[in-house]
Image 1: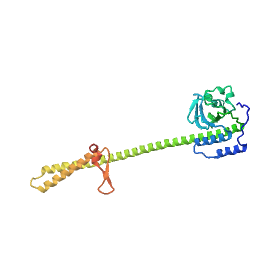
Image 2 (image 1 turned 180 degrees about the vertical axis):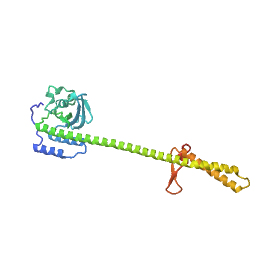
Image 3 (image 1 turned 30 degrees about the horizontal axis):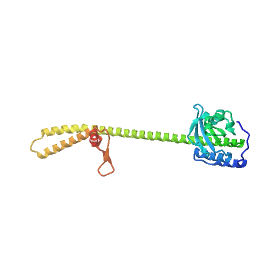
Length: 299
């Protein structure tokens, strides 16, 4: 950390800083973005620097991404912007895992040559690493300005505290997002399980109906065959001239044939379809619609 001697710009007393910091620390935020901008406002008020950022830095890919930004200097620093990490002092903060406070970047032998810093015309800088709960460092909380402004150790300590709060808010939001995603996955799995259970129950009902239909068809068909044979024999022995008997035998044979057709349709049931029995609530199997032939007609 390098500090260049200069005239300090006093911005409020230490007790005012503590009160302001306590207000932010005790405040409840709905999301990490809201927390970040509350911290930016506090940094601007206490330190005086007009540009504040939360960054994510990937040293492996040399990428600096601005997660949240506060730009009162009108430089166009916005959330989501990306640039080479080694073009800004923030890269040094992450690489060294240490806070950095520079009075005038133009006077520093290394920082004055950084391309992104030069392009933006940044002069004063103060930044601290964002250290996650597992100890890894993934970015910075930093404040800067195009004007030369001296910062103090008190300002640095303030940023260190705010950085810890920022990490807590971001990790809390990550946990909320993870829980939401987990709940979504569980809901999808539950819906799938319910759908599979419904399919299983439909399959069980279908199998039950098919077995019942086959059983009924078999149990009816056996005595029906005997009935049809005996009716045939009676018709052959029938003595012409008895019109009433002839009519009874013919009606009985037609009824037996109708019963036979019912047993055939029961054996051909492939997709049970129910219908109301007369006008009551009881339902019955619609044989015409439940057979392959019935499905073809409906389609």
